[in-house]
Length: 303
Image (cartoon, rainbow, N blue to C red; front, top):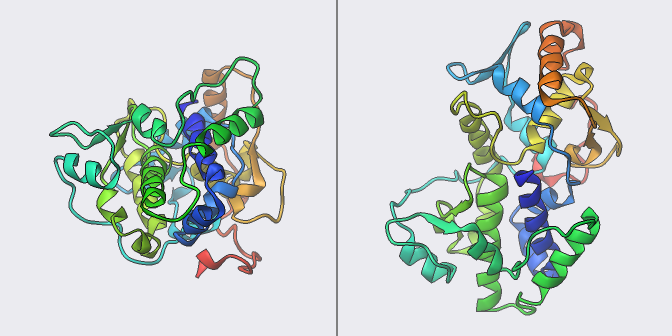
């Protein structure tokens, strides 16, 4: 549920941005993420996949052999760029001065974390909770409306500040989310020059983050980061599991085409059935090349 809430909050700020700010986000290569429908989280599918992850091989160990999410999957499914400069640099023990300079947000000394509430409130999201009986579209519209009041309407230093705050929230709570209720500042040095942000291979870094999350402690039952990626990966490669519905064929990136199929059974029952389905999955129904026949028109991120 937290992952879905984070998605809604970040999307609300993106929609609240004036057109020139949304264009900047698009130029950075993040625009396609915000065209993807807010998908229902499928914890049973996530746990079933996690249980098959071989950390030593960095691949899923299935009865028919190993399979691994690839850069091609990231590009087709999410629309993130997998080419460009490496997302790398120093990780500092303390981001206090950098956060004050680039975000004007509080970071305690000897810390690398911004409190999530402070990060949200800096973008106008003072009351981010969902009201009783409020539909998802009403909730999103209300958040975007209140956020818009706080955001700069013209280019300038305040607009740059808004954009950095948004990117830190987007990267730290959605694309590269980790456990806990804070926003990490590790990407902040890469955001100092906003004109350079689009030159990084964020899709490659995202895949690396997925591997890290899958290789985490076995006691962790969920994956961190942008959860629709692994769900849609399973829909494409293991369609006979029947966990997704192709409701919007032809849209790109491919994640826009899918919805998570509703399953009202208890989570433990779902997980048991999924494990059995994977154990007996027909090898001939495994789709190794799901993108054959797909055209790349209108998808510059595939270059």
